[in-house]
Image (cartoon, rainbow, N blue to C red; front, side, top):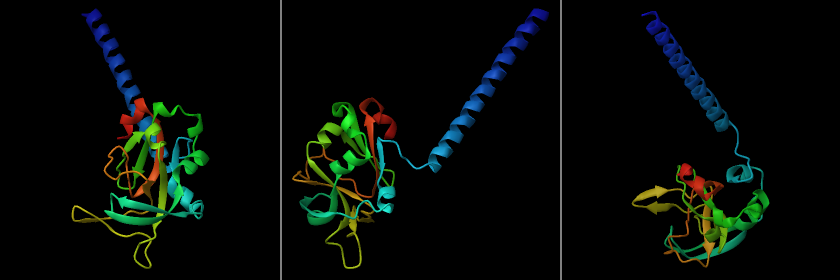
Length: 190
């Protein structure tokens, strides 16, 4: 009986310690998550577009014409900057094996479309910072999708010379961040 009690006590001790360790791990993970929520993203594989705009980085734009805009369903003109130039300046894209990475576009509403980085780099892409054709006094025209009004701000990814019917190319609006992720990790960002 005494052997049974000793074994039971040892087993109970092990289970208690294991539960305490898991609780500490959960607390540490919760603390890390809350800290990461407070800390702006600044690694060289993520670009916080809103932070760059606040720093005045998007003042030198050029007008880019999209002949068939898939979001507005018309010819549009935008004040935009080269997205490749932005990636070259603010990320370590030049050091990456592009065939082993995805580019993820994080939108304000939580939408995160992605595409192979190599495919993305095969065309001219731009970060639209405003809509030249917007009504007077506004930066963007309204987007109507499925009868609902959507906002394009703060940024919209556009392409020059890309067919709007090619679904391999993503045209996210309401864009706030860009991430470069290894292909094997991309499912964690969806």
